[in-house]
Image (spheres, rainbow, N blue to C red):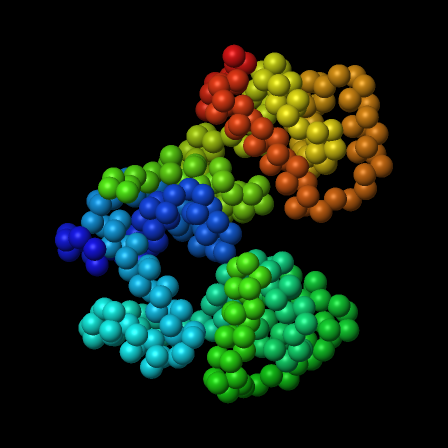
Length: 339
């Protein structure tokens, strides 16, 4: 642990919140992509209630996180004995055993932990050329919704074979599970896988959510709306969301739409409410309106992810223009003014 001993014992949730605050909004947003909706909602709550963190607490959490990551690396490379010998040399007997105790407990309870946190597309690429037995083993450890999404992306013949293997799978020796886990983790890695007080609260959450994609943003608020509706509303009031475009002045909307190409506007409108659609179209020239309406008519079904990406481009344009001072976005019930 770096610095003096902390005055209080932090819970795991508090440590996770401090870690996300300490690494900054960009990396925190990337971490959110590997978490479940429930985990995101829980951490969002934790961050909003973390209003002040001492330098010692921040340094201690970062130090513990680094030590745990190194222990995981050593464990994956050479097993428990190898990890223990390296950590003892680096940190001493007591600290090494403390870290390994936490790590092995986690590994024993949750096989394929790293892969469980990967997104569906990564997992599909990961198992593209894998044998049905290994895929069946992996899917049996994934959360059912994610396992279903991976299964749906496999070829039809492979789907049947994997389901058959899963149905007939009664028990697997631990050595085979660990071997499969190590191989898949290595393959996943190849796929690409200051002195100041850290402050959390609503502002920290807003900064992080502003950096995530619209799909993740939607998932966060769906979970928060159920878990803590008041907090969800407070966060929304402090950030600009796609649906908030109806609150902009006509001049501001026209300025924003100049930054987005015609096709992206059309795709964004595919999943928009009537109010949003009317506001956007009314701020386009008659010629552009007709072209976009024609494109919408012949567009056909669109993937939700593509619609969300197009909407995110409009949101990003708003945020960029606000940051540059070209428009002023007043949160809450206020209006927006074109400077």
